[in-house]
Length: 315
Image 1 (cartoon, helix red, strand yellow):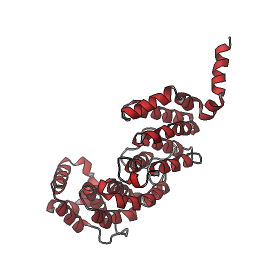
Image 2: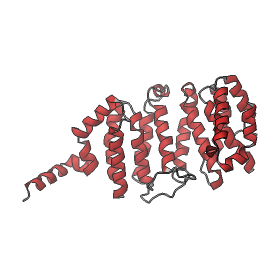
Image 3: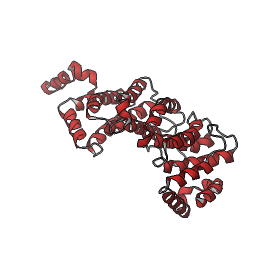
């Protein structure tokens, strides 16, 4: 505990140097975290001492924000061992002020740390009641800050985690069985009106996707990325929707990226055996390939088939 307190007092220095590049710092920090993780009472006592001065309020002084970042990054390691009351009173309440739109470039790290903590808190199996009470508001905030403050990669990971949290075998799925489909419906609705212009990079360390994507393509990729989390019945319903959304991407290069990602998700081992079999059946005999390549409307109307026959009969 004392070591983590010392590292907290030095964080305003180490954060500028980059803690990931300091192997000795990382070793001492992670070792201390690992030891305290074995004792939930000590973890609660530590976080109570490291907590922000004012819970639920974003401080104005840069040093206080720096200490908040250290608290959020450290608290994320203990989400699975803290009881629900501590997780709500300390972690969720401390992260909440930073979840809104990030208008200041120098507060990006706190913004990212807050979203990571909220997702970790809601993903803990024993926090089902907390997740149920917070997830709708958090989802609204997530869509509000994208793409202004979240990169496509960050949004994709956060959205996939939300779908995973709300899908079986998560306990919250028993209370809200339609929540995963509701999340996907929000994305499918937004794709049609989303911008097709490439998004500017928000990354501080080159963690964005190698190829710039548009808001429209980023939404489609997020939906595709979450498909392995769905139950078989829901997956069967959303595969055609994913194909239709891929075809709606206006930029032909990004449309190819989405198509390739959809094929990659179905074939590279991200699906389990039952889901992979369903995907293979949909692709081969369920007209999945035709939907991806030619669009759902042409497949339904039969114009794609007629076009193929015309080509075959032409000299």
